Image 1: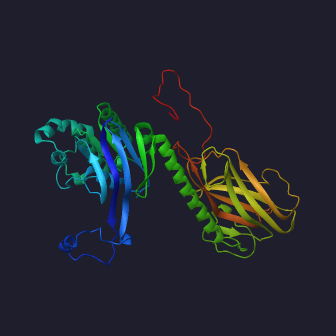
Image 2 (image 1 turned 45 degrees about the vertical axis):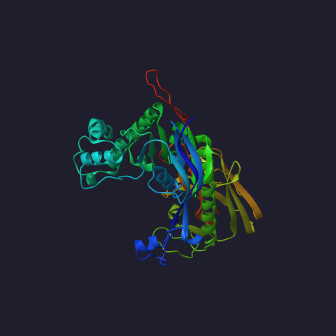
Amino acid sequence: MSTAIELHAVTKLYRRYAHRRQFATLKSALISGSLVRDLRPDETFTAVGGVSFSVPTGSAFGIIGRNGSGKSTLLNLIAGITKPTSGEVQVNGRISALIELGAGFHPEISGRENVFINGVMLGLSKREITERFDEIVRFAELEAFIDAPVKTYSSGMYMRLGFAVAVHVDPDILIVDEVLAVGDEGFSLKCLDKFSEFKRHGKTILLVTHGLNTVQKFCDEAVWLDEGQIKGQGDPRRVVHMYLSDVAAAEEKLLAAEDKKRVEATTLDKTTPRTGSDESRGDGEPPEDMFRASEGRWGSGDATITNVTIDGDDGPTHLFQSGDQMTVRMKVTASVPLDDFVFGISIFNTEGICCYGTNTDIEDFKSETITGDGEVSVVIEHLDLVEGTYKLDVAVHTREGRPYDYHRLLHTFRVKSDIKDIGIYRPRHAWTFTPNIRFRNGPGE
C-alpha cells in the first residue's frame, strides 16, 4: 500500500519569549546563525517531539488530543506552513488544507474575489476556478452573500466558504482542523458526506477534531497526541478509549483536589449560616431556607461528619456514567450520646436547583442512639441524572432541623452521558414507532 504522508522523528521547537536575550533586529538574529538552536533548554518549548507515523493513501486518519497538545503544529508541519526543527516530513500528492478559520481570506473584498484568490493559491488556474465557481458557492450555501465583503460573514459562513474551496480544488490530500466545529449540524453532515466521497475516489483525509464519535465512525486509524508526543496509535475505538481514560483520570484528580481543598478550608461554624442577604447570628436556629445558604459548614458539633467519600463500582470516584450506582459514605463521630438524630443528603446542580433530597426521618427511620464513631452509607442504585456537574450536601441534625453538622456544597461529582439530553433527571424510557416511521440508526449505532 502506498503512503500519502510519512513522518520520521519530527520535532518542532519554539522559543519561549522573555525580556532577556531579545534580538534587536531580524538581521542580528540571522547573523547569529539560529533563532532556536543556540538557546538553552529552558528557553525553548517543544511543541512536537520525535513524532513518527505514516498515513496510507486513500485512508481517513484522525488526530486527537487536548488543546495545546501539538495537533495544529503537526498539521502545519505536514501542510508545509512551517518546517521541522529536526526530522523529516514526506508528503506524496497535492495538499488542500483548511487549518485556520478565514486563513487566506482578505476581509475587505468579496467572497467571489476570495474564491478566485484562494483557488490560485491552491494551484488552480483562473479557468478551472471559473468552471467550479458555481458548485463551490452552492456547496457553501452562500449564493445570496457571495458578493458581500467577507468581513461581514459570520464564523460559520467563513468556514463554509473555506471548506467549499478546499474540497473543490481536487486535492490528493485534504487536511482539516477543528474549524468544522463552528458549522451547523446540517453542514457538518454534508462535510462528512464529502469526506466519504473523497475516500471512494482514493483521496487521503487527515482530520483533527474533538468530535470523538466522528473519529470512531469515520477514520481508519487514529493517533492520540499529548504534550507533543504520541500516546496511542492504531484502531480509532481503542485510541479514543485510551484518550478518554486519561482525560477521566485527570478530571478525577482535579475534582478530588478541589474537594479536598474546599473541605480543608472550612471549619465547623456554630453560628447560623447566611441565606441571601441575612447576616449570621449565634442563636443556633436553623435558617428559614437551608437550600439558600452559602457554601460552608455549620452546626453544634455534638455529632460531626469527619469524612465523606462518594463511591462507584470500583471504589471512591468523582465521575459517573448516567445510570451508574453511587454510594455516599459518611464517617460520623458523636461527642456525646444522642437519641435525636437524622442523617440526610441532597443533590444540587450547578445552578443551585435541588435535584433530589432525602433523610432518615422522611423515610421513617426512628432514631434511638448514637455513640462514638460510626459510618452511614446511602446507596443510589441508578444515578439517573443528565450529564453535568453536581454538588452534594450531607448533614446530621435533629428531627426539628437543628444541625449537628451540615456540609453545604462541599462535595462534587460529575455525570457523563453519551446522550446529550437536557434537564436534570433522566427517567428510564423507550421509544416505539409504527412501521411507516423509519430511522437510519438508533442509540449506540
